[in-house]
Image (cartoon, rainbow, N blue to C red; front, top):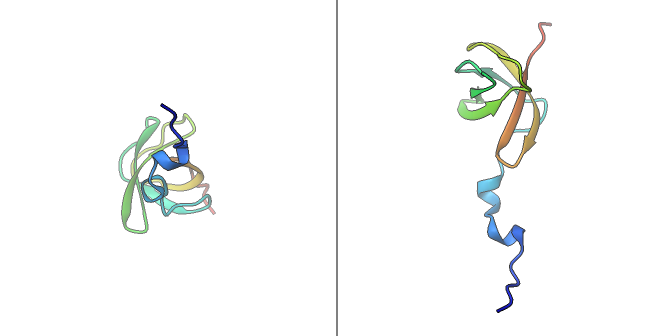
Length: 78
């Protein structure tokens, strides 16, 4: 039996894309230790920091989106 399916065929495009991009600004809803939740534009997503702990209520910036994995950093004060 030969299967012609590719990895791309195995995933739904809609389930693998998030409406987030590097540079988007949001706010943590839980502490990130290093994973937790952050809100962007009224929707809440599972996110991870780059290893650092970030408290709840802190402004964060998206630095990477890979599939459904979102990496954020604390936003520096202006």
